[in-house]
Amino acid sequence: MEETLPDKLSVLRDEMRIEHLDAFVFTTSDGHGSRRIARHWNDVQWLSGYDIDGLTLILTASKAMLCPENEAMRETLRPLITDDFQLLPPATAIIDWLGLELEPINGAIVGIDGRTTPIATALTLEKGLRQHGGINLRWNFNPTDRLWSDRDPLPAPLLSPMSTDTTLTERIKMVKQALHEQHCDGMLVTSLLDIALILGVHPTKQDGRPAFEAYMIIAPEQSTLYINKVEDLQCQMSILPSIEVDIKALSLWKEGAADYFAYNILIDPATCPIVLPPYLPERTKQVLATSPIEATLKSLYPNPIL
Image (cartoon, rainbow, N blue to C red; front, side):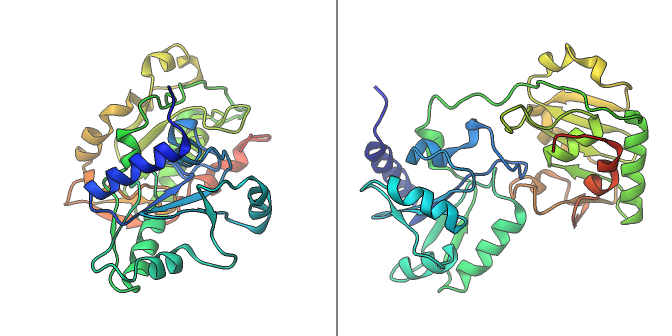
């Protein structure tokens, strides 16, 4: 029988105690900076029952705070709130609330899921928490992984081509030129929109959720797409009009990152999860900068669904 919300929160708090976590911040996010996320990643919805894009949940030993990103979301949530949850007070920053709540705890630790938290978000949170009495941030553990045994599967590739007069080879060349202008040899592409623009396919399904799960490494010699359900993609190979991009299983991404061989690589901190860069070679200089792909390729598509 499926656990009730109070049961989930209770068991989750037990897991947090085992891992010495004083709070955990669950965000409605995935590993690509997507506007809407696949249900596989929606810990907030699984824990709270609220399927609202942009909603954050903070769990401590005694409180479960729902944090709306704007007032419209707050008004939507207000009549739905149950006794298990509270709403973060208006005009209160998550970092400030955590600082006050955890102030009595010496050496407090806050957890986030590093697989779905962008570098920029993690670094901002880490800096802010340290300023509140030296609160530490941990991002290599998510307690729901031990509890949520029936997660929805990752979205299988369902690739629908977007209309454009350019070839994949031409688009790759344009991206490499844009990287060259930023003095970068290659790029770790984490945004599904960026990957879709390169491949010439729609990034989302009709419900606005991601149409696939993937990362991509653009290197000086060979670019590689790491995507889930490669066997499904092979049935759609006509969508990829050249062999400019090698295709491998998403599970092989770590090995591919470790094999990257160039002086530097561009990483967009707004979409790259905090856990990914350490898999790159230590000799490679990591350049944190905004991805040039959307600005370079978006105009090639007359009516893209973005």
